[in-house]
Every structure is written in structure tokens, then in C-alpha cells.
Amino acid sequence: MLSIFLKEVNTFFSSLIGYIVIGVFLVALGLVLFVFPDTSLLQYDYATLDQLFDIAPMIFAFLIPAITMRSFAEEQQTGTIELLATKPVSDLAIVLGKFFACLTLVAFAILPTLLYYYTVYQLGAPKGNLDSGAIMGSYFGLIFLGGAFAAIGIFASSLTNNQIVAFIVATFLCFLIHWGFDLFSRLPVFIGKSDVLVQMLGMEYHYNSISRGIIDSRDIIYFLSVIAIFMILTLTSLEKRKW
Image (cartoon, rainbow, N blue to C red; front, side):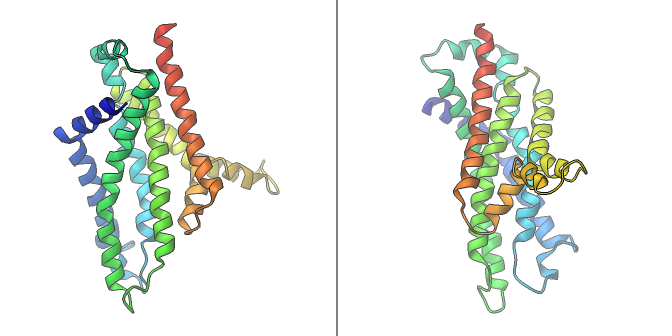
């Protein structure tokens, strides 16, 4: 697994892929936080980073599929997947190596946003007048969300040898699982508390829960379960070549 992980990380940072992803993420957040007047922190009467954590899932829903679309699609297109299969490494190790490489790139993209936290911390009146607990919880939520999106993207990439198709499928699944259940819960067929149960099936509910600053084991188990389910689906997709 380690060799796959190092190979993937080296691929990201030896080309423009990693730098473009990190750059686009930071520029998009910078525009939202400091330039666009409707969301600019400078227009608020109190110190907050809510805008960052509200817009980040939307950016992730496009950027992470762009990272993962080549994971297996490119391998299948070039025929190197068969060569990889002959190596003394299991399918699980291959999937986990690619997953952790994508998650590492996501973590590198999130890390520079701590500068935004420091900026808002200094701008508070008095200085430091900021809900740091909720912000740290939101960062944990972003990591888990990034992991879930990466697992979805890798699964989509294993379904096809076309990277564009993999990107579209992954983006659709990310939107469906993150926001779809909340939209479904608003249908008139869900009455009483059934709408809440439907919302709990979606990632947005658990992401918002973690963002309140309370690390609930149920939210962590949910994200780990989503990651595990899509890892299993990816393994099943890879197994089809042996059937």
C-alpha cells in the first residue's frame, strides 16, 4: 500500500495537478471570504469563518472528483491496471493507497486556510473573539467530508476508462449524497419526524453537526461507514475483471 500511496502522491506533486487543485481551492475561498461583498468577512459585524465552511463542500464536490477521476480510469485506459494486478499487492492495498493519496492532497489544500483563521482571529474585537471550538469541529468535518468524496470519486473512476465520465458520475454522487437527502426530506410525502430521518441519511446533516464544535461519535461513524461502503463497492468493481 505504501508504494501505491507514494506513487500517487508523487504523481500529484510532480505535475501541475496538485498545485492547480490547491490553488483553485484557495483562490475560490479567498474570493468568497474577502472580495465578494455579499460574503466578505470585512462586511460582517462579528468575527466568523462560517462562509468558509459553507462554500468548501461545494468546491470539494467539483475538485475532489477532478482529483480522483484518473485513479482507475487512466489505469484502465492505458492498460496498466493489468500490470498493476500482477504485482504482489492486493486490490485492497491498491484502493487504500490511492484513497490516502487523494486524502493527503485534500489535507494539503485545507492546511493553508489556517491563515484565514489567524486573520479573522486577529481582526476580532477584542482580538481572539472567535468560536474556536466550532471552527476546529468544522475542520474535522471538512477532513471527513473530503474522505467521503474521495471514496466516492475513486469508486466512480473504477467504473469506467473514461476520465470525463468518471468525473461526471462522481460529481453527481457527491451532490446526491451530500445535498440530495435534505432536498428529498422536503417532499410532502415525509411527515412528522420522517423528514429528519431522511436528512440523517445525507452527509450535510452530519457535516453541520460536527461544525457546531461537538465531535459526536455518530457523525464520525456515519462518515467512516460511507467511506467503507464505497471502498467495498470499488473492490467489487475491480473484482469484475476476474469474473
